[in-house]
Amino acid sequence: MIKRILVFALCISLLFAVSFSVHNYFITDSLSFELWQVYLYHAVATVIVYASMEGVSYALPSQAGYSYLVLMFVKLGVFVLIFNTAIFEKEQLSQADKFGLVLPLFLFLTAEAVAVAKLLNSK
Image 1 (cartoon, rainbow, N blue to C red):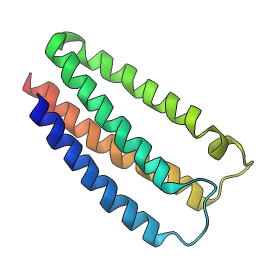
Image 2 (image 1 turned 30 degrees about the horizontal axis):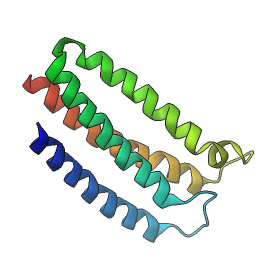
Image 3 (image 1 turned 30 degrees about the vertical axis):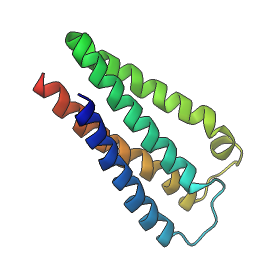
Image 4 (image 1 turned 90 degrees about the vertical axis):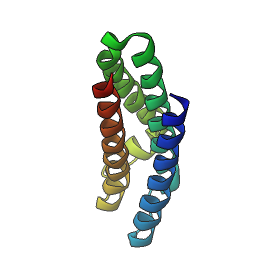
């Protein structure tokens, strides 16, 4: 269990480094928030969700799917609370701001969903 969590954390760290570097390279406009903070939040939250799913699938394998749904809502709620000013401060977000918020979400959500699906199918 610990080995799988560490391997997943290493993969997420690699995804963070590569995707942030590429995204930051292609940005030409200034954003209303720090891009590295958005990427860091999603990377850390993804590792926390996966580690929690490892624990839940070990202790209560029949309830793992429900706990994943709850963790997704908590993750998105905490994101909105932390980045409240960046999202709701401006009346209209620029296209670069929208991509800066949505792209990391989908990248890390996809990685997390694949890992959790693999975990739940193995149990």
